[in-house]
Image (cartoon, rainbow, N blue to C red; front, side):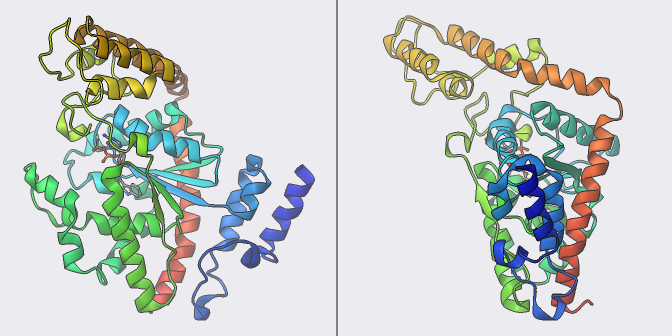
Length: 379
Ligand code: ADP
Ligand code: TRP
């Protein structure tokens, strides 16, 4: 196996087989010489040589980002982090802390610094494996803002005006700054600058990925085949995790249950899940219950079936169901809390991971930007 891998690895590194084997975009003819995406992809891929032969044939590149706008919650975990962590074994994964994006809403420098570090810590504690996936800070790849500018020159105003996330943010009283409006362009740049294939996200990000694809198509129509088209990967069962008020869980809605909240606070949050006024003895509707929806994330199939049955039967109050939910959730998260403590003991661990990640992300981004600059005529 090791021999096979190194033989194939050499083959691809020499680029003798790469264009034939790897599907993906071709660079425009005039800049084909030194801007191929393949060599960097192959070399980074073989850094993670434990992946197995399957991935040599199709090294899918997986990318996602998460804003350091506050503590991460279980909606983030099941909607994006867990799928992203599962995908790190499926190809070459790149995950970043979207600090440029967070600037659209955060106005305190120290808070941004602390949150960014905390997101890295929490993601690692949840199972991101820096030997397999690349973790980095968005702002360590400033080329992305250059690409955002280039994309903005082909982006139709109407496309951005239709973005629901912008409209939602305004409706919630945020000020209409240009950064908030052009957020989807920066996000498109984040994705396209790594030649990403797959983007694991929650459902709320679907439109952003569609905008990314629209901008990639627009660039390709205008300048030739510059970008490949990424796809959103949304897990149906966890596409929208409800918060304690039954709406989508979000840092900014105040309805979150944090992954690493302390025990007392977490219990309090769970116990304040909004329910209807059905009395203890009466049968209850499990289908629309936030308690059941959240319980389904942590419990086994049998445990879930059992809770649903007791909902139907009546005789158990919501308070007792909430206690069960809390116990399950707390137990489920225990190994992550333990891992987090371990990481915290090594003061330089996170900085080292992020520095390594930044280096690798820059290698890819620099290659893609060479291709982009050549395609649009900046070089
Ligand atoms: P928030 O809405 O709390 O600010 P982010 O916008 O930072 O969360 O989201 C980070 C990732 O987590 C995105 O991929 C997003 O789709 C996902 N996500 C956030 N909230 C939820 C949720 N309630 N259910 C499923 N996925 C979610
Ligand atoms: N917009 C995403 C969010 O709010 C974060 C993000 C920024 C992102 N750039 C990305 C997600 C690129 C996936 C890919 O959650």
